[in-house]
Image (cartoon, rainbow, N blue to C red; front, side, top):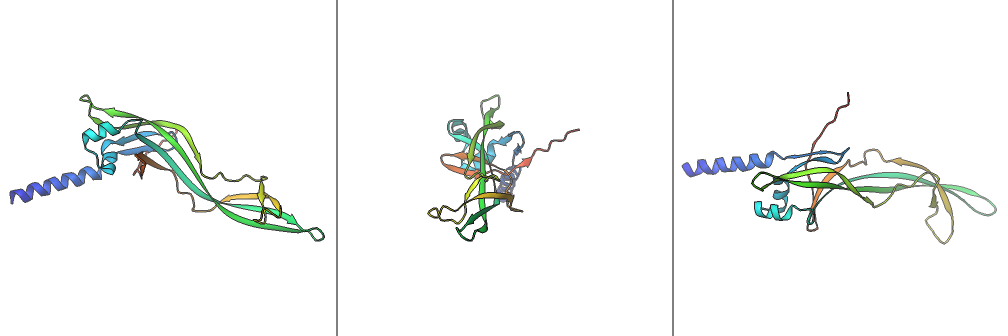
Amino acid sequence: MRRMMIAAVAATALISTSAIAAVSFNYDTGTGFVGKGDVSVLYGWNNAQAKANMTADTLSFYTLSSSEVEATCEWTNGVKKKTTHRKVRKIAVIDANAVTFDVRNNKNGTVTGINLLGYGADLGSTTDAPEVGSVCLGDGNEDNGANGIITSVVEVPGSDSGDMLYVSFGGVDYALPNTPIVTTTI
C-alpha cells in the first residue's frame, strides 16, 4: 500500500511538472522566457544533456507565420479582337525570424531556462506576396508571352496562422506552447 501511495505521489508530481509550462513570449518584441523543462522534455534531455546542448552553437529559436493571399492578374491578348482576361491565384506566404537568446543558470551553474532577448536575423520568406502593379504571367504559358499586371492582392480570410515560436536542435524542430505576454499602453 505504501509503495502504491509513493507511486501515486510521484506520478502526480511528474504530471504537475509537465503541466506548468514556462513559455512566455512577446511576438511584438521577440522577448520572453522558455523554461528548461519545456525544451528538455521535447528532446528527452537530463540536466547534464540540457547544459551541454542549450548553447547558441546547437540550439536555436525562431518564429514562423503563414497566410494565403489571392492575387488577381489581368492581361489582354489577341491581334484583331483584343480580349481582357482575369485570373485569380492563391499564393502561400511564409515568413520566418530568428530569436536571440541567453541561457539562464542558477548560482550552482544548473540551467534553469532560456531568456529570449529579441529578434535577430530575418530568415526570409518562402514566398513574398506579390505587389499591385507588378508583372504576372497571365495565361500560365510562358511561350505565348501574355504577361499581365497584378491588379489586387487580398489576404484570404482565416488563412493567417498567427506567429508560432519554435525551438530547433539537431535538425528537429518543435512548436512551443505559449503564454502570451500582453502589453498595455496607457
